[in-house]
Length: 315
Image 1 (spheres, rainbow, N blue to C red):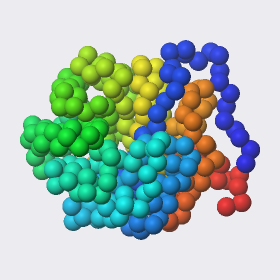
Image 2 (spheres, helix red, strand yellow):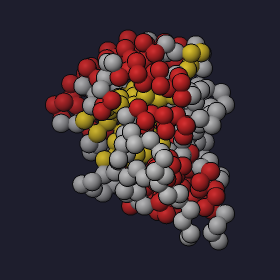
Image 3 (cartoon, rainbow, N blue to C red):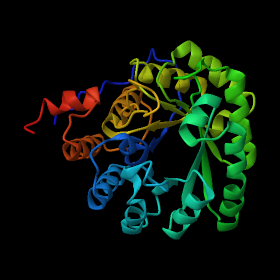
């Protein structure tokens, strides 16, 4: 297909990182909010397509109660069928010790834990206070250290909450610091309901960076108000070089009415390519992965870039 990726503009800020790591969350964070159940073989096929496109970090499942998240009930089978890859990390979300033990038994080599910067969201999402959630993570961190497994941390509602409204940046910084000191090597800051803008994102990142180094931070934006790419560009200028995204813009938030899915990986990579930032991702193969899972879900991709390219093909 004809490439329409823009050339790097010499007038662009030279503060941008030379290379960015994409953390692909579609197979977990994206699919868990999709009503159509995806088979184990199709999930594995999607993950293989993503790794073949050059994505080196893929959140591939989660070990939670299938009663609450039916889409993730086959995570054990998914991880057992994934072939080990020296350059690709297949990670899993493990919200509690039981989930961590199940992940360990399935051969998972990296896990993630999550907290919220909003008390109300924490209660609605995991039925406990923020402090109680942090306490739950202590045995997980200890067990992970013994098993030689790295742990990534998430903080939800870093800009706004569907129940509390605006979130104080000091609270976000406090929770991020707690996860960092527990031993999380990287903290992903999530705008769960997509209300952020360059000003609020800048203020939040500056506050967090006083407690956690920029080199240990990532951003995770939803696109509810169409601000995700703008916020990513803002974060890049501030020094962030790890971005979470979901293939085909999969996902949403069941606790935030009307919240759109994660920013689409295709759109993020298109932006980065245009900025001359290295990702080592094969864009054509990435598009194919998005079209594959969209077809399985019986829906069009959310990614505007994907839709534009799709219109140029015979598909």
